[in-house]
Length: 322
Ligand code: AVJ
Image (cartoon, rainbow, N blue to C red):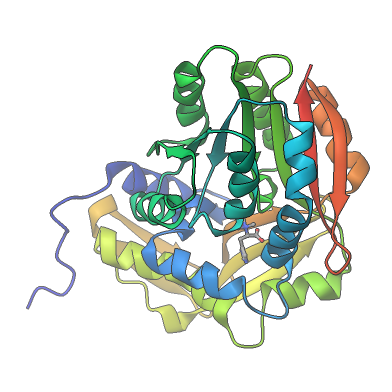
């Protein structure tokens, strides 16, 4: 019986990243973008409904409540580019508001093919919208969107859901600068950022009672088993959420319950784990309102407005390229 057959179509980039991350000398790590295969994306969708995890609902409330005001502050005609569109559900309000004013182009940029298809299907019924999806990495996709822009059209980039929090602060700043370089003065960026909150709230949000976040995290090992013919025993790893005070972030790790060896055949590597050794799988940085403005200014934006949610500390920041 072929238990761990090597799949026919190996994603070599995934294999190389897994190999590099798990052979690191001090802290083993895996890039958080790999959490989002079809199973991981579905689990994150469940997380966004958990009472302990208010982030996504706060984001949606703000977009819904302030869509008119956002539209009024962005002069038309406008092309809207969204980095990491996901299902497109929370963007609906905003796009409807833009399309009530005039015909609007919407360019979702997304590495997940299935999310892109879902998003196009979800939003195509809006009147006066034209949707063209880009299955690309964020900045690559944004470059193409910018090349598509018609003369006189303003570009509004959406980077919602505090996805920026997955970057460390330096990388986040670099990323915003990268976005800024593709924009023209007067273009805008609507940036969603999760704000600082107490350690106990954060731990509850990232280690929920039901264990959905644990499943979301462990799915990364399951994915490596599926796609790279590995033999991780998921029962021998435990999900851990941990506060990093210095970085002002919450980290997710997977902790090895005992010394063990794992074979990752498609990455041609055997990885040894010591007891309690962890794989660092994600960081989620938290910001103050001032942090965001400061970062925006350094990247070449003016901080136009910040809207804050009343129930869950989260901000929608409208930044204008100067
Ligand atoms: C989708 C990146 C915003 O960092 O809060 C949720 C992902 N990880 N629970 C976040 C996540 C664990 C989420 N982002």
